[in-house]
Amino acid sequence: VATALFALTVAAPTCGPLDLQTALALALARSDEVGIKRSEAAAAEADKAVALAVWFLPEFYANVPVGVVPGAALKTQADGTKDRNNISAIESGSNRGLTDLGAFVRVEVNALQPLWTWGRLKAARDAAEAGAQARGYLVDDTANAIRTRVLQLVMGIRLTTRLLAIGADVQGALKEADVRVQKSLKANDGEISPEDRYRIEIFRSQLTQRIADGERALRVARVGLAATLAMEPNQLQLRDDPLPDTSKIQAPDLEAAVGDATRMRPDLKALDSGILAKEADVRASRAELFPQVGLLGQFAYSRAAGRDTINNPYVGDYFNALTIGAALGIRQNLSFWNVIARTNKKEAELDTLRKQRAGAVRGIRVEVETAAADLTAAITKREASAKAVAAGRSWFRSATLNFGVGVADARDLIDAYRGYAEAQYGDAQATFDLLAAEARLEQVTGRMPPTPELNCQMP
Image 1 (tube, rainbow, N blue to C red):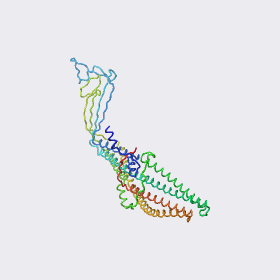
Image 2: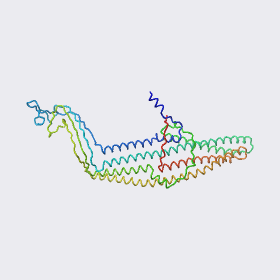
Image 3: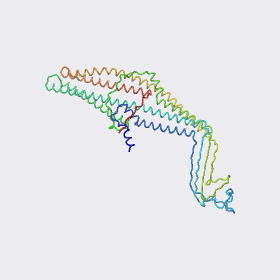
Image 4: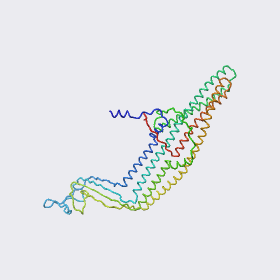
């Protein structure tokens, strides 16, 4: 009971509305994609352990046959004893019949310790070790992709929420304009024409469609984020945080970014490890052309009811025996053509991997240059959109006041509303694009930010 109470006391609190860092931590801990890659890495580590054990530990295996065997008895001498070395004095038994059947059991333990394999076992160990490293790098690569996706989804949800709020503000302003329109039309004072009312209705319809698209995008983003976090959409609760400040984001140094990508990309490191693994595999295949030297040992004990034990050293009885021995053995694969063909195939696969790496380096440079150009353009757009927001907000307020006092028509009002909405949308979209471009550049350069700590648990 005390242990249970202590566990409840120190248990992590339940996750409330998620901020970005908590969402990232949950994704890395719960994502199906990361979990699959970790399982593959664990399997590769097991292969590494097996290869290491085979390299320096002997191989043991046991056979335990159990069955029935015909009986056999030696003749009894005058003194009542049996000469267990004289196998010609047989009282009963034959190898041509099934007489006097009795049970037998045999325990046979064989051992094989490789001594010299021309580097074959060491190469297998090196291949397994490089393969485990490659799987580990693929875990990091998948985690990087998950980080970028979660950031884009969370920022997309915040962006859409902000745009829906802007749409709600414009809808509220349109309701105030409706009051002014209805009042003018009822008074027939000529300040508002039917065309002005039609313009307002068309703008309202367009705004409603944009809001519907935003609500659909919000639902899709929430479903995608919930799937990435391995939870149901109705469990997902995000903290209502504003879009982060982007004023400190600077244009990247292209050459430094390319150098970082060549040095730090997990997928490129995985490819390098794959090349090392295949090189070791080629060495192991070549070693099959040479004789393999090893130490063989065997212990056997068998006992059969109804059969006398024979002690003659020149005669063996499989069913009644106690033997132990060791020998130095040589094993040579004589299928040279098959071994050479397999080696040639592995060398071709190795050449393919090397060419893939060369192509990957060129492709990575294209990705980095594209991401750097996108980030530079996003910085410029964000700076321009920030200036448009202030102008759009002032225009929105001025047009609303002027329309209310009758010094502006519906066209002026709609133009101001559209300009305000587009400026706000452009600013929010530019902020999102800037954050997404920064995250994309970090992903393609292989920069691994510190893994956020998960200090809560899902209910």
